[in-house]
Image (cartoon, rainbow, N blue to C red; front, top):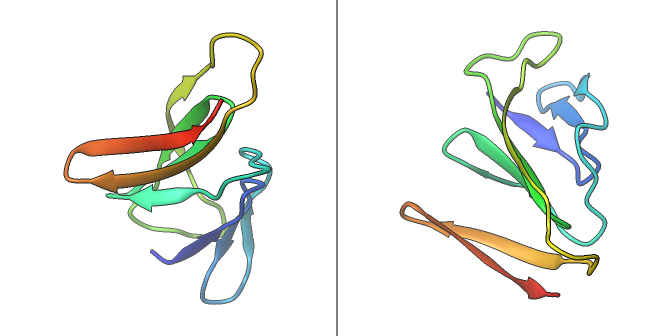
Amino acid sequence: MDVIITPNGDFFRASDGKLLAKDTSFLEYASPIINDGIVYFIQNGGKAFKLPAEVGDTIALEFLWKLFPKGSLLRFVSLSRRADLCYYTGRT
């Protein structure tokens, strides 16, 4: 499954550019990251979706979780993953 995912949460099939899903998230200062079939959108909290094994004319994303930040400060982050840990670095 080859997809292109934008910071706005749009999913495109890589082979032909067909739009599969639109506006699933919004990242202004970060980019989504994919690891082990899970796409993470992390900024001002975050959310994660499991990607399907196969992609047709649409994409069936499985919603996994959503985080809400404490307080009213904006969070600008970079996310990386190594082994079984996700590392969150940013400015609050």
